[in-house]
Length: 227
Image 1 (cartoon, rainbow, N blue to C red):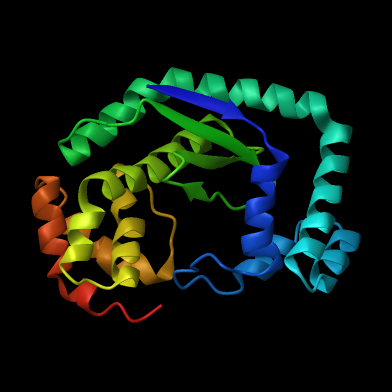
Image 2: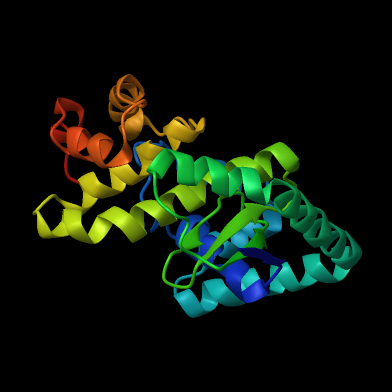
């Protein structure tokens, strides 16, 4: 399996449009997520992005900002791409080994794209098999993000479609997806996942097929409300 690390301005516009301009990602109970993401940006950018009325207007503001930032920091971006590639190459066997051990199934993907993001939030695209990593992440954070996102990919590949056919709500299945990384040591404190994570910790020694089955019948799963 190969990690392919890069930076793409077009890809980096995605979290800006879907989280910073208009919040389209599920918050899973995180309050004021958009506002907290905006805090780190220059005042001029904040004013311009908040004033954008259409997606085209917002995208122009974002692209102008990102192009300036890339032009001013291109050597740093190139260095960070190489650094994150090294982190992932060094830890690849452990990442894949941990996921295969947890799921009891083979890691089924041959290539995973990894794109740096400057937005402060790391989305992913399962259909295209890529996820984003923080531009300033150290080795520990890169490994944590990879484990978290690839845990999602394993869940999608082996379980999601079957669970959908059983009539569970999409939102409940997404909360379960966000809770499962606790079993590989990642706890990102999304409020809506807390109770389900506590339950998963009590059954973590069981095979994943059994964990999934117990989880969808647990009170913590049934209590998850509509999105």
